[in-house]
Length: 94
Image (cartoon, rainbow, N blue to C red; front, side):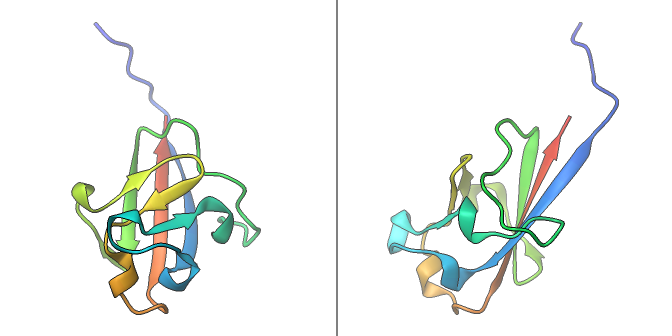
């Protein structure tokens, strides 16, 4: 039987679509374009979150709309969105 950790914590990062580069399936926003919970510049996303949530314009997106690495988030066709759309990434760790 697996051990279930009882403590969960989360880190949130915010940016806008205008911080991204690329087009189509290759549209990405680097982790360094985000600010963290303290308002400071982010250097990387957490290395092994249990899961993450992506919010675009305050709306939770389905899991198939992005991929996350420690250095960037890829949002296919994100370049078609208005550059001012807020992007929030919430990484949950245990």
